[in-house]
Image (cartoon, rainbow, N blue to C red):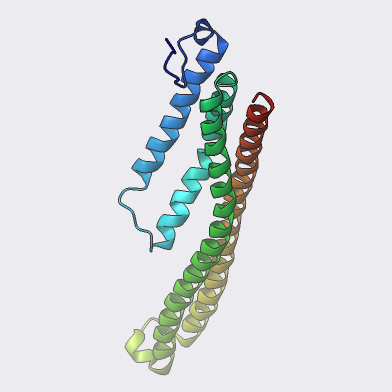
Length: 204
């Protein structure tokens, strides 16, 4: 009577190193999926900040997925059916990670532009108030001189430029970190998938 095929086989080897790899691999995979589902709720696909946050969280947790996938591939070397399934999963997940790099770039540029626009808008509003006070010093208060208003205007421009530079650096650093993780793990998953597929064909 043929035994039922499963990722954790009933053979004696399932209690050895490969059985442990299968268990830990499944735990890593399940943990990654559950974490991402929880973090993605409630979904806000049209919100660029939500998309950036989700991709960043996926990037931060990607090593867990790669580790779990590697353990599952190793644990199912003797099980051709599950080897094919996990190899296919690795290939698909790897492609998704690589394509996510493009999303990070697009959303990063969009978010940066939004941040710069907000800073410019707020600076313009305050600058308008300063200019109104310069044209009517009495309305600004008896203790405020035109020189004070000029210094405030210069300080505002300096702070606005500093905020813009910080926003650019922050978006660049966050995007670079996410892209590097997604790229490395994506290539690793694709390599695992191809390795599993080639190994399965060689044993056919």
